[in-house]
Image (cartoon, rainbow, N blue to C red; front, top):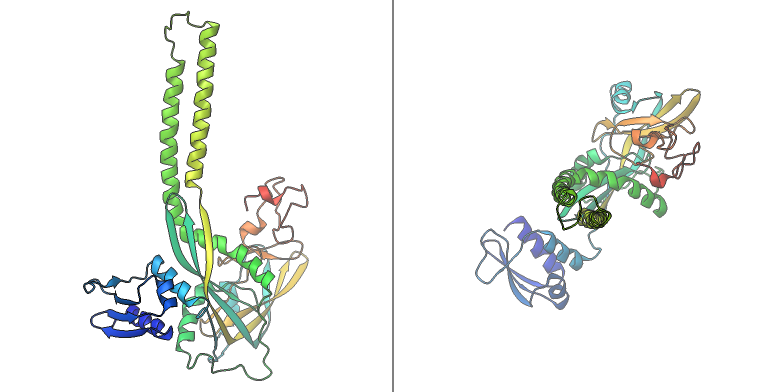
Length: 382
């Protein structure tokens, strides 16, 4: 029996259906009313899961349609899992080298003040996104964060998920008594982080789709421009219409026609923009809470006369020091810049020059407008 058919059989049995397993890759199912409603199947149905299905069977594949049916059936069940791990928690053999490789500061210096054993809580989110334009593109992505330090740990998701799946009993372990585990972020902070973190992650996943869409848009725009350019050229070519060339009546007729062509061109360009406009939606599917011990580095950050302490975790499963969080967009990229005022750490985009005055502006200190020229963020490219 295949993996997909086993999954369906287990889900259906848990929902009260009577399931008879057939070979190869087929199920005979007697479904209760709520299963019929969500899966859009009759009371008695045969489901086929292979490349060839039995005669009269309804073919099942894990495409977006069947995923939506299962999502409706399961509602919010199975969307949250909690796992506690307690692997050997040894510090790195060369702490300075770990900092050098993973803390990339373009305009500041950093040194280690201390290393201590600590516990942290990771939150791994699985999200489904859909981009709709002249075509539709769907996908799934992970966004993962260390709730103690704020670091984005998307690159460690695969290792963390494998460790969680291999954990005996999942939630059987508990942190030792007296150990402090960081709290969950408040809802407003979690929402703010996701608002900043998801656009860049989704855009990265959509890069091929957006590139193809832009090529088609430029092609259509070139055809449209060529067509209306020919119309203008034809309209401006002198012709004998029973009145002297260059007369006021002739010039007025040409001007009126050119104006009509311009209006029609602007309308067609607007239609083209609307056709290729992209709407993106993201939906949370599942979450994993993972609690485990780490080695916590306390670092002293210095820029000019300013100092700031920050903490980063060395994960013993991944065997790598985590990258400092970008306090602007929580990107997973490594390069960070420190602002002059509060030494906020951001990606280069978070400290990019203001479009109004060309001076660097920290988007964490001043998210709405530039403090020098009052340029509003609404017109900011960031």
